[in-house]
Image 1: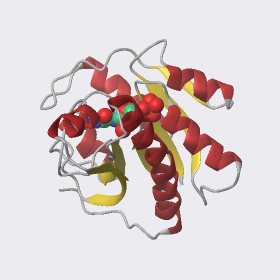
Image 2: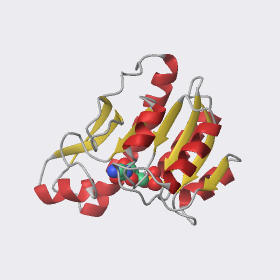
Image 3: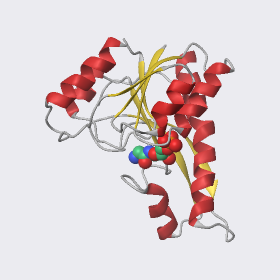
Image 4: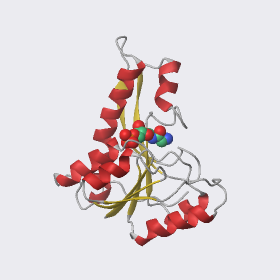
Length: 198
Ligand code: GAR
């Protein structure tokens, strides 16, 4: 299962996927390329450290409903890898509907909340400020509606009276590092079937 990762951040989730792959825990999934919209992002460093093709594709500055030059470049770069699965691991841009239609239902996204709660940016802060006692992380199929595609799996994190926002962020990240490789392995095994695009 040829797998491409898109990300903008430090790449800790990409690292957990690459470590799982190195320990033969990703089933038939094979990470073939990592693309980022941030030139000096940690995710590209992580990829290079593991010897995976890791490329800065330039900014992804397009409106979700249209497609422009940068979208064509991104689609072409991703398509050249012949991906069976595209993993958004901290990709902080909204993909165009053109991109999503092009790759059909082959895209999954990791989100740091128990969707459908706390969609969008700064989800951990949103949960913290709301004072919920349980939050977590979600992996879902990407649809044209932000953070609303079919949920594949989730992992819960309890917020205790001893937690601070920083400790909560750490706890959610630890949960993500377990959840994402597990989901990718299960997709590779056929436990989570690809949905029809909605
Ligand atoms: C992760 O917490 C991921 O859930 C979040 O970005 C972080 C990336 O961390 N994604 C979103 O908020 C998407 N809406 P990483 O670069 O260390 O993997």
